[in-house]
Length: 85
Image (cartoon, rainbow, N blue to C red; front, side, top):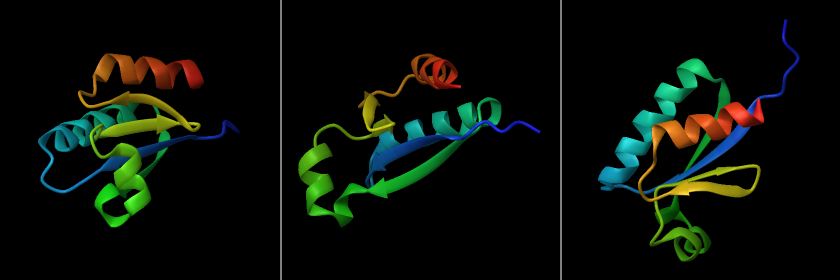
C-alpha cells in the first residue's frame, strides 16, 4: 500500500457560474487518474471569500497557492497535480 499523502485541493466556486461547472467537471476527470482531496467552497457564503475571489472564480488552490482561476485548463491542472505527487 502506498503511504503517499493526498494532495489537498481547494475549489472556490459560486452558484450560476458556467465556468465553475466546467472546472468541477475537469477536477472530477483529473481525480480519476490522480487521487487528491477536494474541498469545495461557495464564496457567496463568506464575505472574506467573496472579497478575495469575487472576480476570479472559479479558483483552484493547492497548498495555499492559486494554481488556476477563471478558465480552468485540464492539461495545466493535471500537470501541476502530477508534479506534486
